[in-house]
Image (cartoon, rainbow, N blue to C red; front, side, top):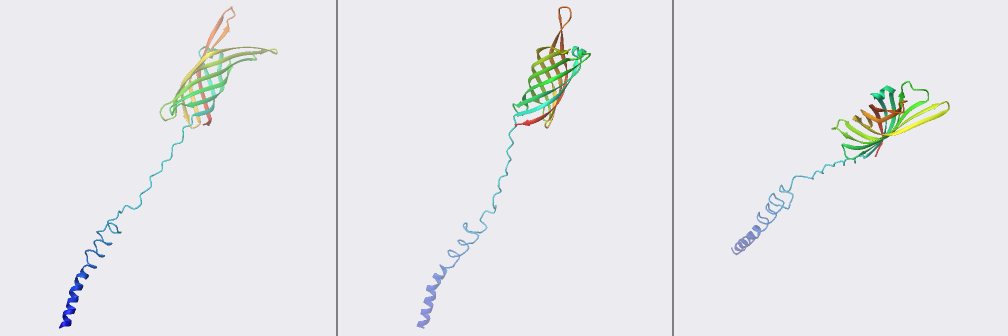
Length: 226
């Protein structure tokens, strides 16, 4: 009987200790361990977004090329008094362009123009050296542009007869304006061109002045841009 009391007392002492051990309140239970309620474990409370996606890279735009060097072949159809003495004129011009912005460019052209003179005596030559400065403005994005030029043209008349040479030249104010079209490195222009005027002796002690103007058409190629 005495032994049964001892065993019963031991059970009573052990029961509270067992309750404080692996119960649901403090040990490895669901509230503090790796259960669903904890915030520090690998449970369902962790973020599920995964790794962040890298931002897309944007290629920087290439800087606009400011300067262009090219050449133009020109054909002039004379009009008015100019057409009375000249059938046509052909020439070649070097061209320089400086882009102020995407639409506007400052231009310069320098060249040589040969005139096909009607009923000219052998050895007679009429030539021109134009030096022009102007601007070209792009119209929209189609390649169409408008241009205007002003400058000086040296008009030279020479005659070689019997082994002797005679020549005379005048430098005149020149203007030109029109429209053009650019496609890649190829440019075409057509417009009004007035290289100046030409003075001739009228044989009576006076002189006559012929104003030279016509339609100039040119086609060119851009050799370099930088």
